[in-house]
Every structure is written in C-alpha cells, then in structure tokens.
Image (cartoon, rainbow, N blue to C red; front, top):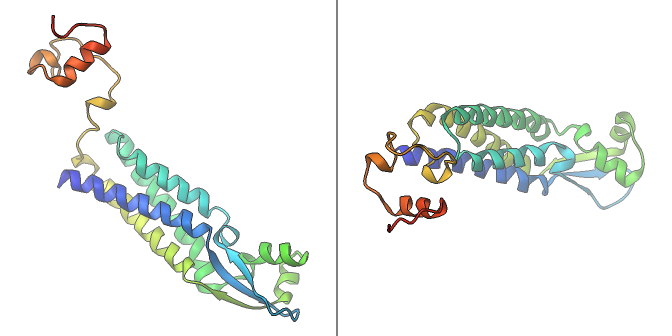
Length: 199
C-alpha cells in the first residue's frame, strides 16, 4: 500500500498538471461579434486564463519531483499542489460559469483593434463555452485531491533509495556495507571510488 500511495499521488498530480497544459492550448470560448462578420473568434485557454500554462507546468514538475524527494519536501510539495489546484479552480470557475467579457477581451482586441472592457462588451454579441473550462476544473480538483492525498500518506512512503544519496557513510556505520552483506551495488560503489572489489 505504501508504494501504491506514492504512485497514486504522483499520477494524480502529473495527470492534472498535464491536462492543464494541454487545456491551455485548446479553445475555451467562441465569441460572436455584432459587427456583421459570420465567423466566430476562438479564445484559447491561455487567453482566458493567462497563468494556466505556467500553473500546469509547475504541477507537472512538482509531481515528477515527488518521486525522489524526502519526507519534509513531500509535505511542502503537497501543500503547493493544493495551492496550485485551488488557484486553478478559482481562476477557471468564473470563466466556465459566467463567461465574462474579460476572458475574451485580449482575443477581441487582437482581432479588431478595439480595447477597453466597455468597448469590447459593446462589440460582443455572444460567448459560448467549449468543454475545456470544465475539463480544467476537473483537473484542478484532481490536483487538490493529489496534494491532500500526499499530505495524508507522505509519512508512509519509503525513502527514495540509495541511488539518490550523494554521501558516503563511514564503513561499519548502521545501514552500510559493514553491517550487512556486500552486494552488487556496493561493488559498483567500490569501483567508482577507485577500489578493487575483488581484492
């Protein structure tokens, strides 16, 4: 269960972060203008929520780092995952539920040259949402759940293993080759230090 807990937490955070990054490149809103043009403007996630991609990348990096961190950093990263998820949730919810003009303002300004909230609002006839804001809300909830699960189970996770340690303990110290059988990993360590393990 210990190994499974780490895997569940890491997968939840990585999947949530990856989904947010993908969502940032997708169309979130379609805007119809009342200028007589038949075409609609597609508003990507990065325009609707400018920090979407950075937050998604941060979650991805955080999830990958969880695979090798020690106990203290697990708790720190768990808190960060919850904070990033809560930020995504707070920023995405108004876009998904209210379809605000501010979420499409930059795209409309780029297409028409008009700026200012009032000018853009007067030009917008209709805003419709695609499923992507809701997908991002699910990703944010998954990220919060992954962070909370990390905080709840981090104390049960095993250490990252000897291959990530850079210190070389003294011979005979607890947990070193002096207090257990000499194995293949110890032989490689001896070779890397210039010693002949066959001597």
